[in-house]
Image (cartoon, rainbow, N blue to C red; front, side, top):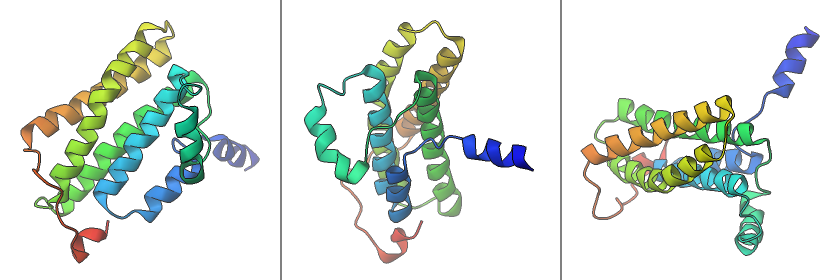
Length: 171
């Protein structure tokens, strides 16, 4: 019994406490996608070691977002992969319940905009590693980004953000 509790305790969350709380608080699909995209951006910032260049932005965001995520390079790459998978799952879940939900196209294109930024960053990281696990995590994240972009290409981007309705708010 002790072995299981130690193992469960050692598991790592792919999101920080603050990010988890923001997602919990936001029931709207588009707001959740914004949080997930920012979470990936934060991990890429750490991986690229651009924290000094972005010191003002980090300080400004720290009240809301907390400290930057910590972890090894492989852990942060794993976080990115899991976050991207989670975004795809969230959009799929909403689609399964309500295929005509007008927030799906908006949220998907918001996510696709992030994926377009992530791809070149992930490719640069891939060029700087020889670790097979890291390469696998990067390839998996790149595949998720491509999947997001392929899906977004099939769905017209809305001209404007849909208006919130009471039934849209519940996730």
